[in-house]
Amino acid sequence: METNSRTLEITVLSAEDLRIDNRSVKKNAFAVVWTDTYNYKTTKIDADGGSFPSWNDKLVVGMPMHTRFVTLQVKCKASSGSGDKTVGIARIPVTDFIGGFYPENRLQFLSYRLRDSKGLKNGIVNVSVRVKEALQGCSSQAAASGLGIPVDGRKDSGVVTGIPIWNGYYPSAPLFR
Image 1 (cartoon, rainbow, N blue to C red):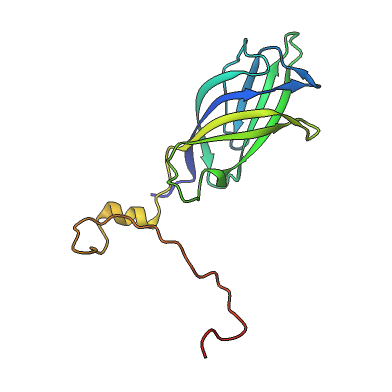
Image 2: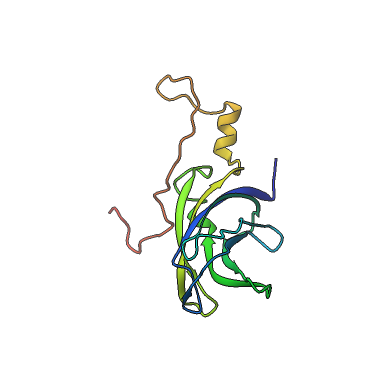
């Protein structure tokens, strides 16, 4: 069963110290989460939070396998109807929640610095992330199919995570003489 995407559950919890042109945001902040050009979701507008909005919105979005960053953009709805103003952007590396020592479906709480269009610091955004449909690797498939070698007479075929200790480096001199 091969798939070209995963399902990402990202909860945009809150933001801190939001500013536009060095002035505190008064109201109507919201966030947009992008995994690529076609996959994005938007939080509800926080009309009362000002520079410290709280959304606690759980967004479920498709994440293609080639995605390297998830982009989180905080915007402010303009009261004059002239369009939305971007407060700041955070680019979240996918490696922050996939490919580490934790299972992909583990809930992780993360905070990121927002940067404005000039690259200057412009607040912090707090999120939680979980991969809902993790890829099935060889060891998971083997465990699901009942393959494995019993250890110490145990009947289960649990999955073991191995950490390689060889890095491909060959010393110029032999280790043993």
